[in-house]
Image 1 (cartoon, rainbow, N blue to C red):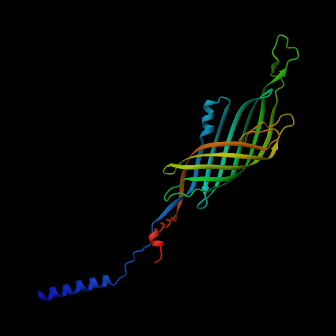
Image 2: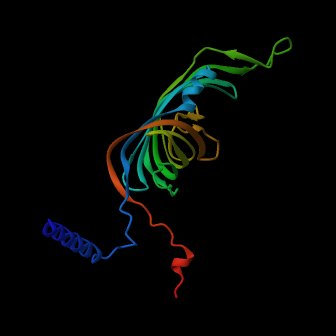
Image 3: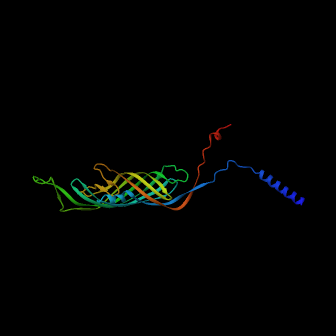
Length: 253
């Protein structure tokens, strides 16, 4: 019995000695990594959707999307259709058309570990095709002793079809992840007309996707508010940044 007890004690002592001979690494590197989602984010413009309800002279829809290429770079696009009736000077007219925008967004916001929010700047090339229809016009009344200064004309109404415009667009915006893969976004846009095909009889006062034009200027402004959902296609690991060393660790003896 004593022989077996002695053997067990010797084996136990050998195991302890072997374990103590190994060097303990107190500065072991953190191997935790966060896998960021890469995929297609598709959404809709809430501002145009809401405008359908509070403005009876307008109907429109814009779909948005982007695809993540790298840590901060995205391909982005918008597709839309708009119909808008306006009163400008002596003319009441309706503009109907579609547009598309394609470009890139670059995220300049440094997320905390595990977050997917963005503050981005970007650019688009946009193209729109549309038409104008004159609903009525105002004629100056030369014999207005008992009448108004202007009378409404509804004869010989014109329609101007086959019109187009293209422009470059600077974008500044943000996207915030509300819930897992669900994002709320907003952006402001500054456009510069590159081409503007118009009829000689009627100017392109309003262009779908570009908004109102200004005489003597090629610039226009716009905005959108979006709700979008990310469809993850794959995940790419991002290593967690090393924590900053304390001042005591950085001091040299």
